[in-house]
Length: 504
Image 1 (tube, helix red, strand yellow):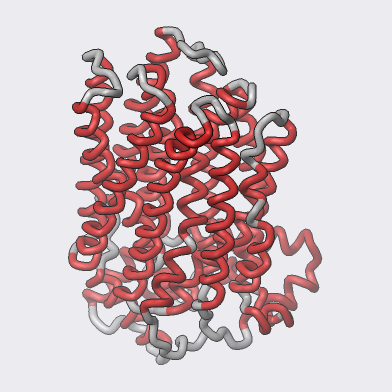
Image 2 (cartoon, rainbow, N blue to C red):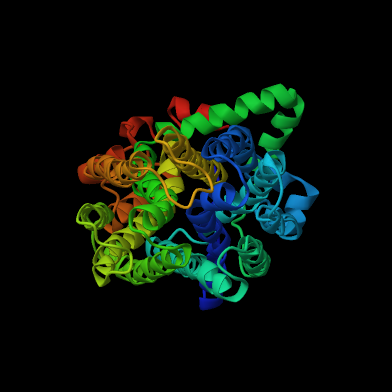
């Protein structure tokens, strides 16, 4: 069994360096979800279907790459590179010189195959850096409040980068001209430079817990079994994470909150331009303002998550976002244009909800490896990070690709300055039904999620109780808590279950 990590103080530079890396994690996703469909269809001559195909192909490849990176990082500590640079942190260091691939995605005047290859390349580099990054909060601390602060720092930086993703096109449009495709290439260059700086800071100001014995044994088995056995072990390990009840519920909340935003982001710019008779600059300004509101909402959500139930905060946030979406649709039905001051009411409401929905799933994610540890007796942060990154990118791709295919089926014509009534109605239905439908799913799941500061404290005490050699619960109440979080009876915990065998 792994030993407890040595106590090492987490200071402000560690929080800031960790959080700053979400300029890549959230910033890249904000740019892609908000602008790539517009770039492909309005500036590169691709159809909405071709743009959607790029997302679909990239995610099929990522279905293998993301969990593989997580699995390898869990077992990389036995190698010389892993011992020298860190089993997680080596991948972060290696990704830094590859991050300029983001700018290549936005080079104008290329064809379908160029954009497909450049997008796939960046997604692989992104997975290589982000999956190890997502393990580091659990590696650096086991304390609930410290992990919540890590998540808060991460999401605040992520929201700051989203603000930049919203406003930067507007600033570049003003500098380069309304119809310049170079707007997006310069945006890509600026973000690529930020990605490299923040990844470097993350490497310098992070560390990993010591894991004696386990990684070396697993790596020897991996090498002895060959590539086929390694891939089989990888997916056994991957699917085993789904047998942890808290993680399944966490994924449901995560998907409800994030897919709703992906659909909204992919549709919003088109909706402003064609349904509300706005411009790309106005859409950029509205997105940027929404992200500012989200930044404030994250600060509020951090306090709520530390003091109360994350599930309750999630429910309030989802309701705010849904009301904002309905209000936006209502303005369109009333014929209110994007230039009206009334547009700011739904933007503020949606932003308040979206900010909290961004923070809460990542705050609860940092505790999933703790729930898994009481089930398996192992630390598998990399496996959970691989699943999270794969699910995040796969669902975002499905949402954005789905928007592209549905818009094309609804009559959208790439490059046209005006769209038909049918195409605009399709945008409105996507924005309303697509977004709110996903929010309702997340709300339903959140009512069953009971991880909180109080239940996490009980969980950690029971882990130490079992680590000391005990095999019965410290109290009946503690048994109920850990059984609810894990989904397993108490006598099946600490390796006495099929999950532990799959995880080896």
